[in-house]
Length: 200
Image (cartoon, rainbow, N blue to C red; front, side):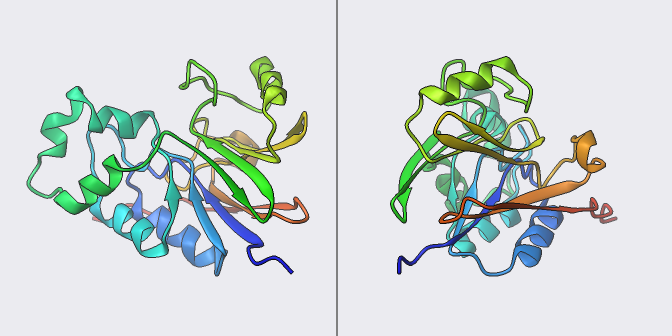
């Protein structure tokens, strides 16, 4: 029997450490943790969020907010006194897409779209979703929209876990969410939870 089975999928943390902590606690033990980008929020850097991802050995990709902070516009924010240099370098070392084989299944992860323009918003009813049928993968993981999706397109099951950081999805009552994928059966489970109150 092959080893990896249960894959935790999170996205769009946007430096919400409390939202991420709830997701990690609720999903329990997973064989692999994937993050589909937007770890930070443009000019806001979150040491705690990055340390949680590092501690869990997450495989991450960069989203548009991460790229803003790491680019010329984010120099001032990235050099702020509270930003730990090892966490910044960890963020900088993450790829923009991930293409891996897990238990014989090809999994491609992109933040917005795997095709240019990469920051395209692919909602469950976006016509451009059909183009994903061109990709020879078993699973395609997306983020960016904060909207949940588990939709077969071509050969692949396209999954968006929603957001653990900023709720925008009316279909789940504007709650935070993550997904767990059984990579053998293809079963996807979404878990929705309330936005934690702001700490004063």
